[in-house]
Image (tube, rainbow, N blue to C red; front, top):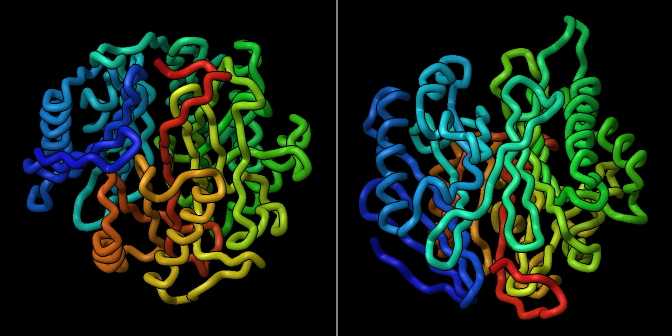
Length: 408
């Protein structure tokens, strides 16, 4: 294992065994946050073999980082064929060990010749012990839904994953399922004296056949947000809306979300960079470009799905995936810079490609840009066909704002 200090308490780790990358952030007295991306070797033929190897690499990485499985907060497993692979996956501890870990599963085929890839997020005390966690029950969140509440000082981090509903009839629409998903999350939040408007920070929305179904989701989400008091004059929620298939065979849409309890409005900043990107409301969608959350010892930056767009909302570099990749990173850098951070503060990234054949080219480009943090590259079409690539992620920077409770 080779480690390198980046800055602001951030360390990146590249493991010699397998394709494992980790990033660790910790302030002097605060809790430790760890992000890992793990892929299997490409020469393994079956999904079962690849999954088994990921399990071993994961446990070895945790041991090397002095972490236990109990420190896991969230895992997302990207698979290539969810219908045929779900049975094998259901027997893996990566999925079944989810009593106090939010485990998301989505069909977004990993690129570069693997069938599965794992992203794991861990939080622990400075000496590596797990935080207080408990499973939270949805009254109606769909058959595979899972919710975990993590407590740290005054804050509660609610991770809700795999929210999806089976079609009740042949005429079930994306609109109906979008309504059900957001209603179930709203109901759960209200049970905890929280709301979408005040407490939900980030969503990931997976839409089957996005070229046909995205607009229905967008219209219904806007209607729901208006009911909750969220408009272009107030704020929205950082989000990624991308092609993806959920565990439920006949579901059109699924959602993962992060909500934070015990947070004050003054701790949340909504980020824009109008010299580079226009407002999302200009073309009728309702999400924030990025959201910053300030704690007493660190800042979190939740970067929404970002693509090659200019300040007028026009797509730049059509048919040129590298041109689009460069502009996408430039847009993310501009968003972070406007909030006092930079790409050096990135903790994790998802890279979505419309055309799988672009994967080698994009991986080479990212390596040339010295992107050393954990990141995934998966097949996921973006909501606008002209966009060949989209990137989202999370950044963390140090902060000393004694007006807010730290994560320690």
